[in-house]
Length: 231
Image (cartoon, rainbow, N blue to C red; front, side, top):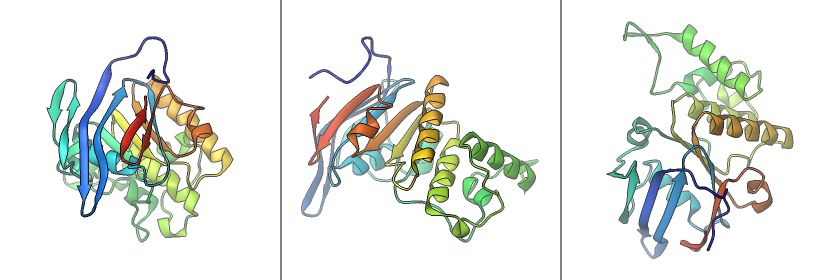
């Protein structure tokens, strides 16, 4: 079957081959192949429970495949953690918000990757300024000193996205990123996605909303019951 894509395909920056993930009593993924194209929006479509999030968690180092392999630049790679994947240029925006409600927006964005002075002291002023820049890029004027617990769910989703953008990612996975966003916030997100694509970032966009996904897709595949059913 032919992919939903432009007539000439760009290079493949990330490839998952024959990925299988078995949980007790359940085969979540079975021999799934998935390709991420350079500087493109790669959409993975499927109903809830299709295995989309499981596949992305494997690509982002959150989970390990039972069998299969992942390649970047033609070389096989293995991720033992999210940090491991991030060091190889893969970032993820989780569907389930992965924020600490008792910390500020800035502290959440730079949690585990603090900017420091002379490699010792945390440079809070520089982190706060960088947080403001990231939020402005997402067209939000959220105070970076606000506790995440005091934000609306939609605003927390924006912080989650800003957190992912803080890294110099080559591949950015977005797992149902619009689930808590308003229509205007979705438009801003799509604008950011197009900007990232123009800067050479490859986007993996997971959705079960076909109409929404087709607004931004360059390449699309369908996952159903743990199997790829369309390319």
